[in-house]
Image 1 (cartoon, rainbow, N blue to C red):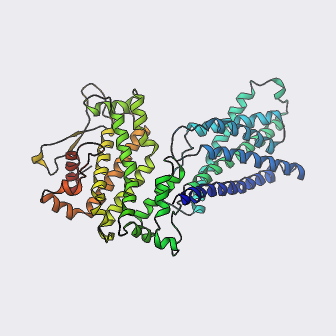
Image 2 (spheres, one colour):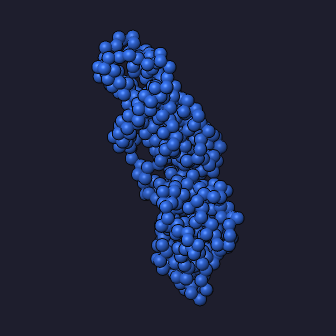
Image 3 (cartoon, rainbow, N blue to C red):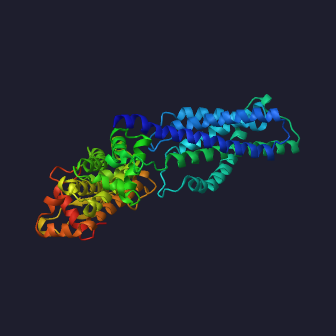
Length: 492
């Protein structure tokens, strides 16, 4: 188990990095040749070869620096100074490779590279965005080419203006006295070089996104001895042992979610329900862990508030006055993708266990109750973050008794749902997470609706479907009443 994780799992990321550098060099070569043929075809063969080598060196420097900051989490990266420096140097070297050695050209390339890197960091483009639909690599890359060209055109125009303004403050020996016709010719060549450089970088960024967000199958080849004995071990070992913020962890959760939701890898999902039940417990545990962490982090973000928790959380969404609460609650933004994959995988696996679990390991292990309890607890925590007031109704109003009301204030504050914070990443992610959790719970309730209604009529719903341990958020009574609301298909 450990040998697979330490060796083969690490090779997943390394192989993708090598493939990225290889394809990036091909793209850079094509763009350089296109620029040389159309713009500076008058150069000698020796000059073209030297320029080709220096241009590839500059693109390699930018690509390596880009790989150091790209991450599936939108947290601030310590490698940003390296990226800014590398982009500036790479820009200067690329400009000289395109237009020839000149102090003015080198400075414009330096300023353009610094401008691009600053824009890249400001827009948080270092975050790996996993696509909703996994397509073949060629089609995924092809879909991003038009947007890369348009963005390169806009950025090259802005960078050209930025570098031109900086040249005004340079010493006199950086300026040149050119005739009007030569000035425009040089300016157009400079702009074409800037566009070619930015196009290379945009395609490099897109290529990095496509290659590193492609699904990897953490399983031995079908039909092999390992596939017959323990096909789930590579996936579970990666989920249990890789670092939380690593790309490997994200790829493993993506693979787990697709195995649980789709029937393409049915043989892998069937292995989760093996007779001993140990594999299913491990799978359920890796799905429950991120959701439990989400609820606990939100609870920590709520600490220190007044008795009316909705009041303090609504204040937080409108004005970041409490750094401690913001840092805790913004974990929802940082790990949003893992939380959604965990909820979807847990709900799909629990729902499918009704027909595919031949040995009843899901029900006997208590995983079904843990799944529904954790999902509802997370939903309550996220709804509190969204500004909903949670109230527990009297027990005689059991069916449909749970009420969630919009938080309103008599002190002149706005309702968080109609305020001006809709552009806040925390706000949008909270609503998206609530939708995922609500859909996941409805999936389980729909699969076990008859059994849950039978338990409810017998007064055993809490015993059968709510875990006996303290939930990560709220109380068992709140979870039970929320579950009744889902049974009536009235949760919204």
